[in-house]
Amino acid sequence: MAEEEKEESQENGTEKESKKGGGSNIVLIIVVVLLVLVLAIGGIVAYLMLSGDDGGDGTQVTQEKVEKKKRRSRSDDMTVGPMYPLDKFTVNLMSENGRRYLVVKMNLEEDSEELTPELDKKTALIRDIVISILSSKTVEEITTAKGKAKLKDEIIAQINRYLEDGEIRHIYFTEFVIQ
Image (cartoon, rainbow, N blue to C red; front, side):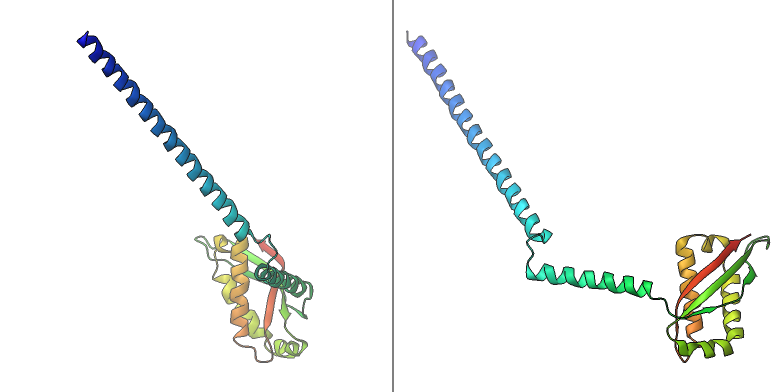
């Protein structure tokens, strides 16, 4: 009998331990679920605050500034200044065999009408600058859109160094052929 009582008490002890362990597992799961919910709610609140959908003063002012810049840049693109057409350029491009050439025709956009007489006087200088820049390029440098934009910027910068009555704002290629 004494042995049976011992066995029963041991069985009861293991049952109590398993019940205690099961209870602590449930508490742990509840704590983890609550922590996940708190983090999710915090994330949603942070997203809503940072998204700017609340129409607060700070975000509204920033949005108005962005819209004004967009409108201004669109109007600048739509209002083209006076154009100064240049004759066609035919130049050899830098290449290993020297058989590649470029045919370009372009218009210079002036910032004001007062620049035209100066450009008339400096046509030879402008042509020399453009020929020097174009002939120093390889086919790979000028075939991409980025390459053409970089080429335009370089030509504008060089020409504007020699102008006194105004400046060139943009260059528009009206013909661009690589052979």
